[in-house]
Image 1: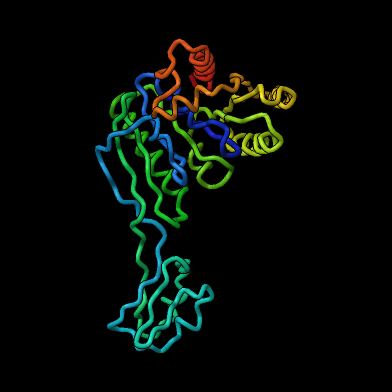
Image 2: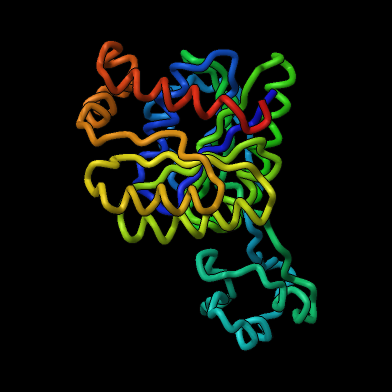
Length: 291
């Protein structure tokens, strides 16, 4: 079993569209959408939820009105202004509360505790291409890195259970904690970028992050023909840093047309030249990176 994580230094590079297309081309695979802050792979794969689980998020303070003596200590100490003072009680504004526990320790009557959020959920689903592990991050939740780690763990368990050949992960953009959780333990990280100044800067950032963790990397330049000069600069950067460019993909509206129908490009236009381009890139990705 090989774990391939698709990442991008910035959003909007077409990462999810490519993952969806490759999902229709690769068999015996478990799919994971680890872009939990803005999950959208489900739009293409149309998963049918089989199992649903709550994911405890960040904890916020709760005041036990029966034990509270209205001394106001928590109200005075909270630097986030999360304690709201009423005429006969104090209550907590969940949006403002950072779960720092200061009020809990300062309360002389022990009337304050922490309650984990129950706004996030993760799912085990089936798709027309295979099992899918995905999630919905609760509004305002900031534990996306831990949620990504949970998805990766469950994807490995499911892949072992069905003896899958691959785990294909749609990773989050950027270089933050969720990205680190998504690439940790992967056999190969595939960076999807686009030929722009911001794309070049973010390519360097995500490449250095992947290099820091010692994970093999390949690069795919999407929409290369919108800026051929920048594409050449990206290819030069990859060559100088001993990183293979697995493919360059031209711009085509067929991706948007397929997405509007909630299907992948190979399903929408199996004989379109783009379907063959995508297959060639996938073949180069699978040749290496732990194989």
